[in-house]
Length: 124
Image 1 (spheres, rainbow, N blue to C red):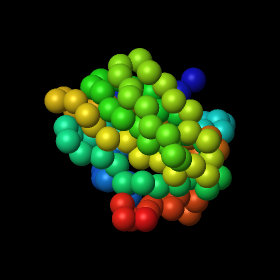
Image 2 (image 1 turned 60 degrees about the vertical axis):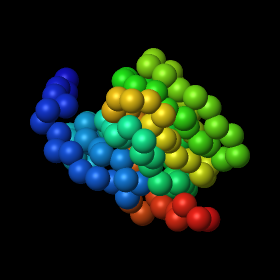
Image 3 (image 1 turned 30 degrees about the horizontal axis):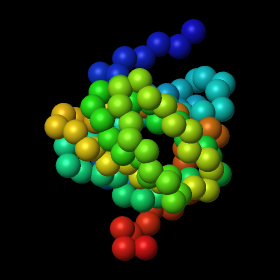
């Protein structure tokens, strides 16, 4: 069994400019799983920076707020309890389109690693 509280997870700003709390990652915990789980948040009127996970797919699951996810050449509006699967290799970012903080879970499989993430300039 494994247990951890979100409050135990230090917040930091990731390369894509989201505030992240890494909840579960097999490199940090003694767990045998093939995914990582992070809690992300974006202030109203902000967005993450476009990025690509070259070797992993990612799920966004919206907990609070609303936003618009951009995946490849598509976009979709998201609200509480919505989930989207982002295929590996897809350019992606999400913007907060609401008036409250956008909070969402990021589940990455295989687990997220800095080496496989490419952060792009918004002008690209």
